[in-house]
Image (cartoon, rainbow, N blue to C red; front, top):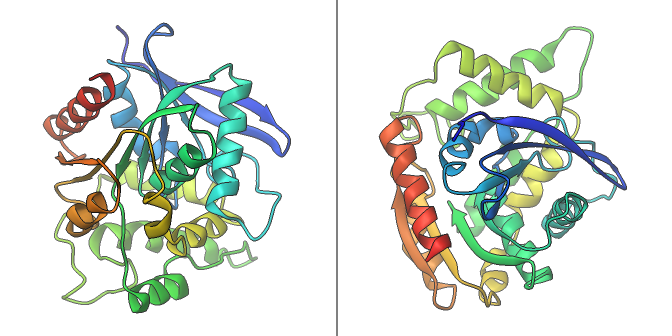
Length: 278
């Protein structure tokens, strides 16, 4: 089976949703939802690994990457989920598994609540349960609005948001306590990730702020489908893993691998495949 990741567009009322796809067309369908502030580019290695088990469709969330801007404000998680489900329906998908990373996990929650007949099983990879103070700090600083100007300041601001997010958590906490200790990605990956952010520089913050303000505790308690909450071994949201799983009736939980290594990617892909196909 080819590990190639292809690309396409599908029409919805707001314009077009861009998506990446991998895997055999007759394999079980899996919708993979990326985190903020980037696009499905950020999960290409995992898309490729999951494509060995599934027909993967990984959309850029409306307002991110190469997808059309949002048309309904203020942007909410349920709006983002609705746009995703409309796009998948227009691709001919009427039921599928869902994997969601960070913001994508929130979108998966709302999709499962809105259309329980469509989402068969859900993996939430990284679920933040912030204190009121931490949530307020993140809402104030994590997703700054950036607009193009004649000095090109948006280029440097986007670069620092992406780069510093790999060094610190949160990215603006440039202190000893904030150091993640993971190191930087290679220069080509850094460049490509910044380009993905620049594509949606006018709109990305709406989605990110919607995710940071999303009150997930009462929502996940309503889930009726099989759910696995997981976090990668280097994920900044891993400390919330057990608490998050305990909020969801009957949920499983697990620890994925380091996404920077082939072994870590395979560990995560196998963990998800075992859950989805059980």
